[in-house]
Image (tube, rainbow, N blue to C red; front, side, top):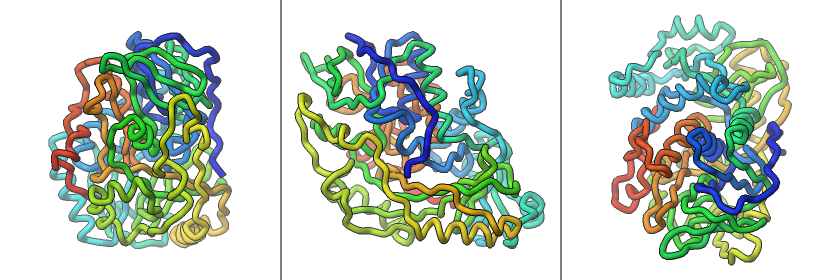
Length: 442
């Protein structure tokens, strides 16, 4: 069952025209709408279901700059700065807490990789570093595990997925953005070689710029417009526990499972790297591009043919803009959780923290994480479609990177000098053979 997210009240009347139309009410699209509205740009966001209804409302909630892939580090640092100031910026609590986050290990080779990452990123001046076995034990006194060390950041933290994007969306509305939920954007029309209108299930809106921030649905929308984006998806499972004693105020990643404290006194838990990939027509079309990623994670992922082969974001749908699209059939894509992951995860969590031995599972859910071939997002203009910017493929990092990713997308849409160099996120890198090396720091 999908987690419940905070409510956003939709605007009622479609405008005749806006400067920018945004596809997708996840945290990327919402952050872009907020940024654009603050700059006085007229913007309408169209979400086929509800704001944060899919991955932005069901992720782990980690907000970190530590252990990001090297191309993402500047974006992560900018995003963390925005997270820390979010409540003041939007005038309400976005659920962010700066609690510190850490990853623990019993593997000396893994600790050596962390040291290499620290060396490679030392010029950024980020806070935190390696902890000894004794320092790790002092920070996690309730654990039964004998960790040889950890990498820790005191300035990282977490936010509640159920709260964050909806709070930002309401703030965007107060600043002038229009948000339409249960209103799928089917595509756009062109005039004179440029975007002229977006077509939604409730009518057409004149605009000249479009941001595609549809998460796992982005490649499907682009493909129907005659545009290509190599994208795959991993089905994942997470769960939350009942309220229990605090063993750490932040989040801890370990070799088998990761957890973080919640505002309600429980813990959100997921298994590290575990997930399922389903064979789909769109996936087979991009199989060559995705092969290095699947090979790097072949020990963690299971492969099968499921219902998504015929229906869902990676099936080969085609539709006319005058007719209902697949987005209207899937208002809130809600994959079932994997019961084995929940069972194994809660057992491992209880064993690692005996003080929580009676803690029960309160809720579990599934999700679909969209990924690029190199696990670095595409935040870039779409070649061959003037006025169209893509911000998708966040590979499980979108929630943490969301505020800065939305800001960068807004910069690209308006020609504003960006706070972060967009070059590492160019969509053209895949066609030109410049994909980033796949790094796994944990």
